[in-house]
Image (cartoon, rainbow, N blue to C red; front, side):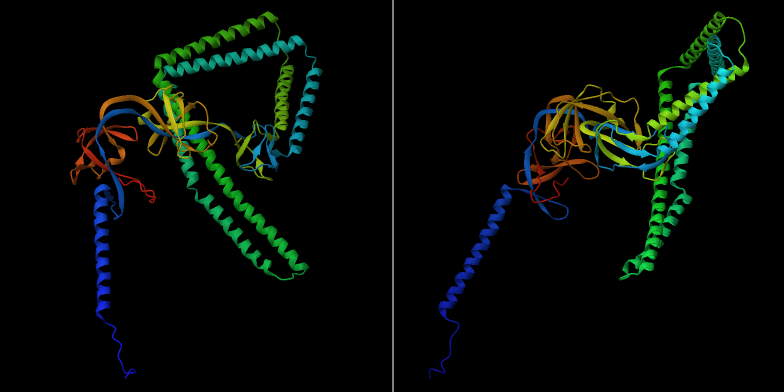
Length: 539
């Protein structure tokens, strides 16, 4: 009997327990929903277009004061920076003992040229000068003759200057050399420089040459690759791998040299464009500052000055006495003067065979490489003095007309939150640079004190206060939204929220002036940045 007894799983006691659990669950759900509703009443939220909810804050429209001004961005730069190159020395680079990022001391060698060829040039120039002096002495020239020669040279130079000044004045009267004529030539030079730069940038031959060298270098690398996988190579295989490796490295170097040469040519063309644009800007400033009458008066004054120099040279020559200098002696004296200058240039070139740092700093860029040739005075090393910094503001042409030198500047940094400096605007440039469809002016900001963490290359936020407005309606700038056509705010009216279009005035970046659309005491809703959200405030 006991073995056949059935177990009853559903009993009144168990039914009662299950009912209690269901009741408790329903009460918990009701409490949770009620909590959410109460929380929303005290903590309103705002929904992003994507559906995310962010916290908001209701703010009353109040009257207060606002500082009108200009907000611009700037850059922290080294106080000293130099682009260094060889002024006279030319030749082969034998050593580049520095690299970008390396600190150097004043007088430290940055680039070393081969001095053998330079010493040979100096020795040749000195030998030629010695021969010329011996020839001059053989002609029996006296000190009086030397003085007369110098005066005759001075007279010829003065007469040439007078002739040139007279031609320029006559040409100006005929319509040539006027400011407008010089401007037309400067415009043509700018266009020619820009055309040359564009042609160089679009040069298919240079790009094809670089591409061909790249393909050749890649093929050499492919040929060399399998040789590295040979296990226990014999002597012949090692020699072949060495030869193929040398060939590969040479072809890779040729490819990199072609790229560097192309980039340097482009930089030189860009420099010519910049110089032509600066020349044009200078002429335009001259045109703006003066009139054709003033230009003619300047040319007439040059004629009078040149004529006075001619008369003085003639008087000096007459006082020395009559007589003509032998033609052969004059030629010998001129040759000595020319060779003395050549020797001086050769000595200067040898002295600068070692390009040294003019001040202690950090190397930013190096374009010279060993075994390459220096053929011009292009900069090969850029040196920065990072011991102290300056701030340069980048101001648009719209804002620059509102600024003047000496205005107070409040400086802050994104990289150094909470730390600020106070400074003054330096001189406002007379002309800017046209970039991206707008003209920009670089204005130096002189600031007091410093921050230990301030580094060159950091960005700076600059505010130049201009005018203080008192007793104006203010709302937080974060409360303003834009729908693509106009500005609006979310106006809170009891338990309802509506969009209200507003007309805004001055803003200091934190608060904004309301001209129309709101009254004092109105309440607007603004979003808050969530500490867990990386996206910040939604406008």
